[in-house]
Amino acid sequence: MNKNTLLLVSHPDFSKSKINKALAEIASQKPNIIVRHLDEIQKENRYFLEEEFALLKSVSSIIWQFPIYWYNAPASLRNWQDQILSPIVYGPENFLMGKKLRVVCSAGAAENTFSSTGLNRFTAEQMLCPMQMTTNACRMEWQKPFITYGASTITEEQIQEVAKKYSTLLDQNSL
Ligand SMILES: Cc1cc2nc3c(=O)[nH]c(=O)nc-3n(C[C@H](O)[C@H](O)[C@H](O)COP(=O)(O)O)c2cc1C
Image (cartoon, rainbow, N blue to C red; front, side, top):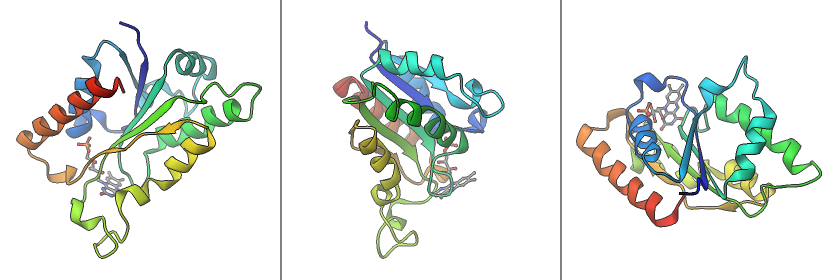
């Protein structure tokens, strides 16, 4: 099967991860998905641009998967965005144009904390607004984010439920 989706996992402590490990494992079983662990790939915080460009050119869908760290992505994804996107978007050919981009993230806090009246004051979609704006600036197509809340206290049973939903989404959308 054609590898049409690039899944970039950003997690500085992946060996201790629960939910992101489970979701990356599900994705790695799909024949159309290339799974890359950004924290393993970067060397002294730098990416090898030509390798990243070649992979991006080869797919139609990109997934950014990460645990929310301080209302943002961990450093390896932020580094990737800073180093990879600008030369493409401001370069001679924006080959990202038209590709689909989905955020798959986990938040330690419970879902009800993400509202105008909750502890976090904003919804998770509002929190992801810079990534949606980045997607728009790259002329990619923003897909509905797949968000797991309460990840700090998630049970094994809940992980299995989330993983099942994620597997179905990956099959349905080929993203
Ligand atoms: C440095 C750091 C910052 C974090 N910031 C947030 C945050 O802003 N909001 C939140 O809901 N959870 C936050 N968390 C909790 C993580 O999102 C949570 O541990 C993670 O989603 C669990 O996923 P995992 O099982 O794959 O590690 C933070 C955790 C760490 C270590």
